[in-house]
Image (cartoon, rainbow, N blue to C red; front, side, top):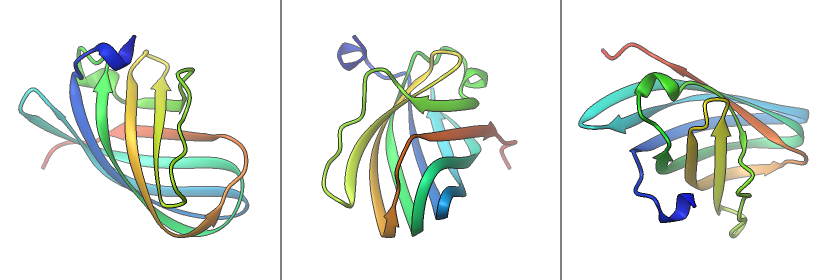
Length: 127
């Protein structure tokens, strides 16, 4: 089980979201793996939502043998998501390569969202 494994990397990101019926947002982050800092872009899409907010997240990355496997489309992992308070929560995401992120999220602003979310991560050149 992932909860018993040591993480392969850590991640921090910021996503700005806005929505009316559909929701979308963009942002950036940094993957830290074996002393290397790998920047990435984030695009988030959701079904249903109204308002605007900023989401800051940090967490651990599992099943990541090579940083090139980090990019891709992430959806909520089968491990589930645990909701905290209105502004603090925990979310598990998994991409098509089996990479799993456990994120602790902090939201500012007001956003009411319904339905599922998908996050697309694109690796960027360092510099």
